[in-house]
Length: 55
Image (cartoon, rainbow, N blue to C red; front, side):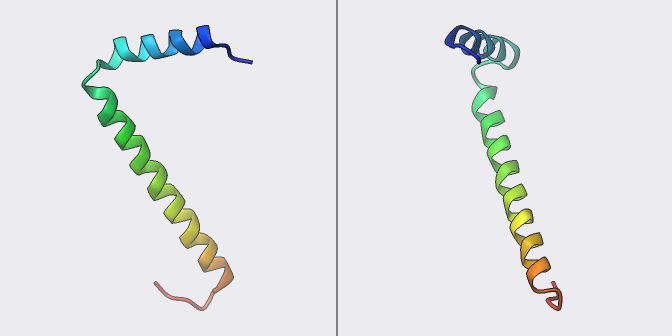
């Protein structure tokens, strides 16, 4: 199990590596990527349910 000390250390390392200005950009990019991935998975599930559907 990861403790609060390890989480704090990881956050400090991320802050040092990327800087305070780039962290919101990085988080936004990750969020967009997750959103697109979920959309693609949902589209893929729809294709499996309705194989006659054309895009």
